[in-house]
Each structure stands twice: as C-alpha cells, then as structure tokens.
Length: 259
Image 1 (cartoon, rainbow, N blue to C red):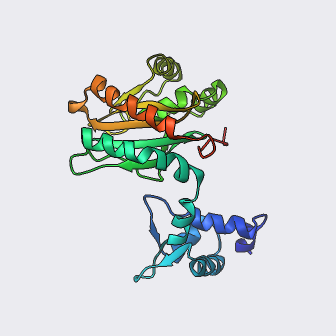
Image 2: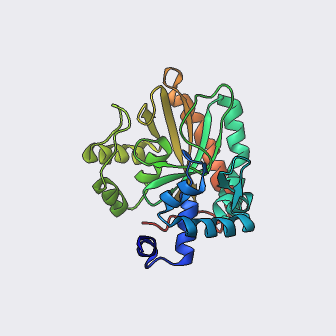
Image 3: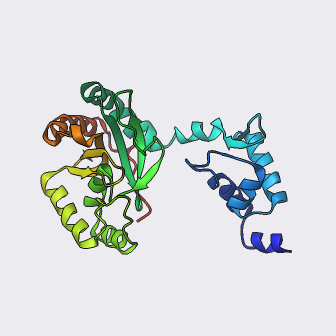
C-alpha cells in the first residue's frame, strides 16, 4: 500500500513530469530503479511511464539498459520562443565575440530565481566553466545573473535575498545588503563583473540585452581571472548586445513568468 500512498493526489501527467525531472546534468543516464527512486513513484509505475515515454521519443534506452532524454524533447525545446527569436538573433554576434576574444560567450535569460543559459559558445582556448546550453545557475554568483537580477522588479530581488544566498566560493557575495548595493552599481555602470564567485580561476563580465528599452537577456564573457581585462571585455560586449537588441522584433523574446 505504500506505493499507492506515494501516488495519491498525483495525476498521470504529474508522475510523467516527475520521471523526466529525475534527469539532470549530474545524472543524464539513469536505470529504471534510479528513476523510480528519484521520481518518487513505485517501480511498476516507473516501468509503465518509462515505456510510454520511450515509445513517444521523450526517453531512449541505452545499450546498457539505462535511460537518457530522447531527441523528441530536444526538438520540442527548439520550438520555444527563447530559441526561435532571441537565440537566432544573438548567434552571429556571439560567434563574432568568441572569435574576437577566445572566451566563453554566454546568453542567458531569467526564469524566476535562476539564469537559464539559452546558448553558450566555447573552444579550446576557453576556460572550463559550469554553465551549459539549456542549463540553469543561480543569479547572484554569475555575471549574466547579476545583470538579470539587477534589472528585475524590486520584489523579485527581495524574494531572492530572502531565500538565502548560497556561498559557492569564499568570494561569493552572499550577504543580502552587499548584493543589493552591488546590483545598484550594475544598473549604474550598465555591466556586471564577478571574480571567482562561482568557480575558482574564472572571471565573468556581462551586459544587458534590451528590447525597446526593456532588459530581456544578458550577454556575457567568461575568462581566466589572470586574463581579465574588464574594460576591454565590456567594449566588446556592448555593441554586440545592442546589435542583438535591434534584431529582436518584440514577439519572440522570453519573459519570466515565475516571479
């Protein structure tokens, strides 16, 4: 009966979402037992749902019997406005920035308390970083996140600080008052900078992307701390972000609905 109690009050759709939500960047391949445990559904239910999701293409079964996210979900994800509009407008300028600087180039939007990375470009000369296309990171320790948070409504900033600010390195700004002051500085100078707040050895610089005066995204560069020439990076980013903003048509931009 324990299995029935776990399913009580959960719709079939909700359980299917739980199965898909069991996968993440740290666990991209899972066994059926792991899916059952992480999704908190009985093994028999997990077996049925996984079979249906596999048949539809949302999951695929690997040769070792483990499961991974299927191409069908990737195809659907590409239809989201954030891809069809913002990403397409930004890609040429992101490629130019990468060729010009050799740095990691990131494009992010805010979804509630997180920065969602719409696209990321890197190469052999780029420093390894945690962000990935389609991934999420907290706002306060990242350059793009600071830009997005700085231009969020005041109540969003208050709620974000009230959640508690995790400290990822000794350099992370994790005090609410200090963060609020820093966000004011970001708005004043129109760019954000972090130094080893998310990972050691990396520095990020980011600027806002505006559509009709409203900040809708952030464009950033991440380099080794020892190679960080902030003024030079800002000079490269600003015209690129302005060009992306001019490309947007007002109908395809992602806007956070999780505030």
